[in-house]
Amino acid sequence: MSTEPDGGIELEYGLDDKPPLPKSILLGLQHVAVMIVPATAVAYVVAGGVGLGPADTAYIVQMVLLFSGLATVVQAYTVGPVGARLPIVMGSSFTFVGASISIGADYGMAAVFGAILVTGFVVEGLIGWQFKRIKPFFPPLVTGLVVVIIGLYLVPVAMDYAAGGANAADFGALHHIGLAALVLAVAVGLNMLTRGVTRLLSVLVAIAVGYAVAVALTVATGLELVDFSTVGEAAWIALPEPTRFGFEFEPIAIATFAVLFLVSAMETVGDMSGVTAAEGRNPTNEEFRGGLFNDGLLSSLGAIFAAFPITSFSQNVGIVNFTGVMSRHVVGIGGVFLAVLGLSPKVGAAVTTIPSSVFGGAVLLMAGMVAASGFRLVVTHVDLDRRNTVIVAVSLGLGLGVATTPEALSGLPSGAELFFGQSVIVTALSALVLNTFVPGAESPLFDARSPESGATAESADAEPVGTVDD
Image (cartoon, rainbow, N blue to C red; front, side, top):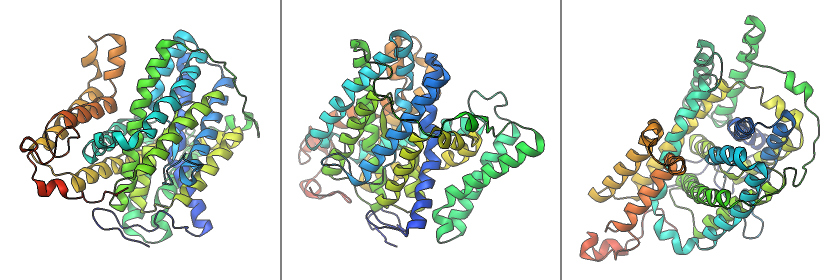
């Protein structure tokens, strides 16, 4: 067990620690269990919105799992300059859902995957390549707020799951709320009141308990909480098919995905900062660069096989902070499991029989932990003077405003409404613009020693707590 000073948390296993293999396998499965439904839900939602058939939908789900696993392994261990050597679980992001549906409906899925192929590595690769130069524009004040809004944005998603899923006929039924509450209570109880392996595996145990109760309720009451029919229909093995949907390169689609990949890069920066906050530090330039390269390259490669863009998963950042297990080897094992699931539709189908409400209790906990890690990043590394407090207030206020009242933007053109209706975009851009152009010690455009910045020469020379000198 290791501990970290300067704002970090007490870690059971550090970045390069290797827990015993049986424990590592269970911890890796815990990461998979928390993210597999949200990751595959992206494929289901887009396929349904575009009108794809069951075979195409199942194939896209399979590819999302496969490339999520490959990207997670690369993130944990690196291939050349690609990867951050951090415990970052990768998966398909909801950031791209709206654009994928609208572009897929108007231009076809070939235009969607063509745009991803072009913009994935071009945009995030360029950001990663030049990140050392643009890093001053992303201090803990900006990245911390991105982490906070990601966590807060996930809360309503988690509540939808806890109530049975947004499109459930019995949305909000007592049995759904009860299952979610059971999972949440078991996870919190085991984490706070026990020690050792039960605390480390608290989320996985809670999901298993919730699943067992759901199966029992299905048998005893006839409620359709768990349906095994899809497992019998699924094949054991299915190999990837390159260019299954073909490629088309529409300028509007490319421009849209280019902006979304910029937002995805900011989310990844925030998630990486949320993970390293457990050690009381910010990511190094090399970690940022490798992580962004991984995002972009694996997204572009995945597009060849019809996978949606792959990016860091915030729920699993919450697991790292909740359990104190920061081992990248544990996450690497989780990536292997994801890749195997991507090659076996039958296994993936079995996993997706777990009810949404069971995952809802776990995701709700993880969303709160993500937001908490962002707050810790801001409080630990940022002097919350008048300037910075105003930036926090404006950025979170605007982000939560568009998240809770999206109809307020209905008067904008459809493209602008889609763009500014994203809470992560609004918070990130607000924090970035305000921090850049308002004079202060955090601003990259103003000399921290100048009278306008309000900082002294002594404070300008001080190294921020938790940063790493590259």
